Each structure stands twice: as C-alpha cells, then as structure tokens.
Image 1 (cartoon, rainbow over the protein chains, first blue to last red):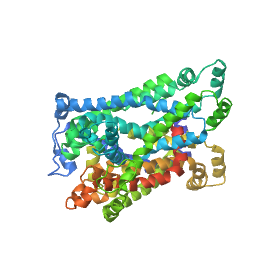
Image 2 (tube, rainbow over the protein chains, first blue to last red):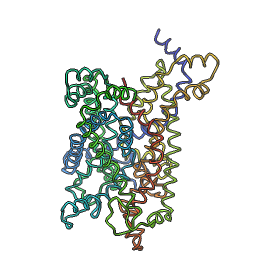
Image 3 (cartoon, chains in turn green, purple):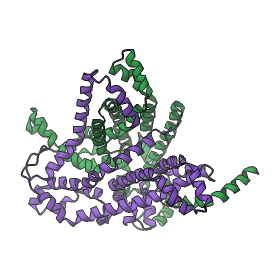
Image 4 (cartoon, each protein chain N blue to C red):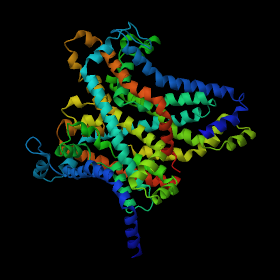
Length: 311
Length: 295
C-alpha cells in the first residue's frame, strides 16, 4: 500500500521527466525490439521473397529445425567457427598485452610536452574508418609497396615480393597488424589513467628502499593496476565471438577466402548475398546467444573479482 | 593530468638517475609513433606521385593528376556530402535523444528506472541480426533511403550511461532552485542542465560524429541498390575492393594511376578528421576516462 502510494507520488512528480525518455524508447522499439520478432525466421524454411512481401513470406514458410541441423551437422560452419575463434584468440594473446606495455613506458616519459605529443599521435589511428585503414595498408603491403621495397633493400629477392593482402599465409598477420595499429594506442588510455592515479608516495617509498625502474614497474605499478587489467581482459574475452566483421569485411578477397570467413561475414554472405534468409538468421541467433551468455558470465566473474561489473 | 604533473615534478629532482631507461623509453615511443604516422606519409606521397614509381615516403614525379581525377568524379562529392549530412544530422539527433534519456535516468527516484535501464541494456547486448533487421526496415520502407544510415545507430546506451553518470554528480540544489522559480522542464533543461553538461555532451557528440563518419556497415546492409546514397566510407570501400574500378576499364591513364587515385581519395577523406582532431582531442580523452574509471 505504501509502495503504491510512493509510486503514485513519484509518477506525479516525474511524469514530465518520463516523457523525455519517449524518443529513445520509440527509436529502440522500432529499430531494435520489433526486428527481434524476426528471429522466429530461424525456425522456418527459407522465406520466398521473390514472390511474397516479407510478412506474407514469413507466414507462408513452414516451421522447421532444419537450419540448426545444418549448422551443427555440416563441416562448413565448423570451419567458420574455427576461423572466428582462431582470429579472436590470436588477437587477445598477441594484442592484449601491448597497450599495457605502451602505457607503462609512456607514463615514464616525464616531459609533459613529449608525453602529450606521443599520446595525441598514438590515439589518431583509432578514429579512422576501417575502409580507410585497409586502403592505406593495401598500398603499404602491395607488391610494389613500402614494405616489400624495404625488404628488397634488406636483401629479399625482388621476385619474392608478393601482395600481402592476397596471400592467405599472411592474411592473419595483416589482421593482427592493422587491428593493433588502430587499437594499441587508444586501448592504452585506460591503463594510462589507472597508472596516473597511483599515488606518487608508493614510488617515493620504494626509491628509499633502493628499487630500480623495472622493480618499481613489477612490484608497484603492475599490482596496483591488476584489477583494471583483469577487468579489461574479461571484457575482451566476452567479445571472443566477434572476430571483427567491420575490419575483416574490408580486407576480404577471393584469394584469401578460406582464412577470412568468420561468423560475421558468413551471416552477411548467406543472408544478404545468397538469399538464405532463414539459415542466416539461425546462424546469427546462435552467435548472439553464445555472445550474450559470454558477456553475462564475464560480467558476473568481473563483479566477483573486482566488485563491479563491466556492463 | 593533475597527478601526472605532480608526479613528474616530484621525480624531476632525480632526473639524472635512470638515464638509460629514459632513453629506452623515448626510443620505444618514437618507434611506436613512427609506426602510427609513416603509413599516412606514404599514402600522402603516393597521392601526389605519378604512375609507376616505387613510392616510399617522398612523392616522385609529382603531379596533381590523382586529385584532378577524384575532383572530376561527381561520385566523390556526392559521397562526401552524404557523409557530412549523415554525420551532422545523425549526431544532433542522436545526442539530443540520448541526452534526454540520460537526464531522465539520472533521477534516482524516477518511476520504472530499472525497467528502462534494462530496456536499453538489452538493445546494447542483443539484436535481431542483419536479416530480421533488413526485412523489417524493408517493410517500413526505409531500405534504400538515406534515413537508414542514421536512425538504427541513434540510441546508444553506452553514451546514455556516460551522460547519466555525469548528470548524477551535478548539484541537485541548482535545479531545485530553478523549479521553485517556476521554470518548466524544457526551460530547465535548456538553460540550466545543458550548460552545466557541455563537456560531457561535447565528448559524446564527438564519439557519435566519428561513429557516423566511419560507419559503412549500414550502407552495406541497407542500401542494396541505391549506391548514390553511399557515404564516403562505403564509397572508398567499393573503390579499394575493386567494384568501382570498372569505370576505368576504357581509360588506360586512369587505370595506371589506380593506386595514386585511391591514395588521393584516402587523403581527402582523412582531412576532416585530421583537421578537427587537435581541437577535439581534449574532450575525447576526457570522455574515455569517465568510461574507463567508473568508480
């Protein structure tokens, strides 16, 4: 009874504030929630959009579990899943530690001007679109591009110069390299903030005890930013199902196809390019559900470890 | 930043110690920065070069041919205009919508506050997927219209959270005083809250602007036939993937300069970002701290 009264009171006080939520809620319903109903397509035979409008096509399709049987039975999806996890895991193993190293070294730059300059230049790549980044590096790694020229300078035979972007054996390297190029500087911002927040007294005290730079980093800085590192790592692992569609789609070409086909590109290709609408939706649903579970579990673990969630 | 300067003042006293380490740090950072910057210089050099040279970091056979080709092609200006339109309109709309929502959610005694928070979290974590979205947008007639480049990205819960956190920490007393003076909700928002929230609004606006400017996926998914609505990012993608290159089949001169033209295109599309970058960096960095250290 009391609660109801309180609610009535709060409604009266805040009805105009609630109205301010209206635009966001309407946009959310129209552009995110209503399409979620379409997930039901995953349990239908393929929609025939050549004959029908989408809605009629949906009603006319039969209910079936065939799509999921194909996903789990076939080797094709396994290969795609493998590529996704392979690229994701490599990205974490290779790229996750780098921003930490950069931030540890950058915060040792005592000249404020120099430090600012380093920071502003290393954040810049983060603000470029993937189509531009791929454009840039396609010419850097082209057959007659910068990298090959430098390699030839250092004694590589000119006939060995290849276009790195069309060489499947170099593709994953390029994925890691460009992702690192775009992200390392920007990702280090979190650690820089954390390190700058450490009280200078710790370092003072350790100096008296005769600690050198490296032991300061190892025994003071790293333990004090451990929580941030763990939180970021968990958050990163949560997104393991996303190997980076926006990056890889810009880099794809026919020659490297077996290496780049990840879940994101597979969904796009099956659905929008080949018209297997229901199957593509089923793959998407599988992907979203796994990703969602990962994020919820990750959030739970992060809360247990550091006392706050990552969402 | 405050801490950084205090710390460095304390440390300046014994600057002469650890010189070797300090040199190592500067060398490391310089190499890292060069890795970030050299590809740009290469592309700039390439864009000003003639065809057939092996370009390092210095342009050879200097010519403006590539830029002339890009400027002659009406497609570039069309795409540039579309990007500008999408970025400006999208940012204004998105920031307004998210700001209003953030203000409402910053009131701790708002009825159904938890419900609305959940409502937005779900949007952030889960989506129908490309095909359900595509078909629904087709049903409501938005596929192949420029609107589809703006609205699906408008509500961003992460930005709502950033602004909510900021607004929660504003002094409630000023707002109460304005209410006593009889200010309506919109007057209050416009004259009292907005001016106080300018820093966070600018931060979010910049993130949103970059998000719209760089996005190509919406065009890729939802503009299947109307390539004339492509924003710059998608236009460039089409170019580097070779789909647009067919136009040059009959023109050997252009075909030879393909790489240079591509470089010119990239340089031109990066310029707006480079120009605005120094002015906006302060706000961008500030925002990332709010998000990173939310204690």
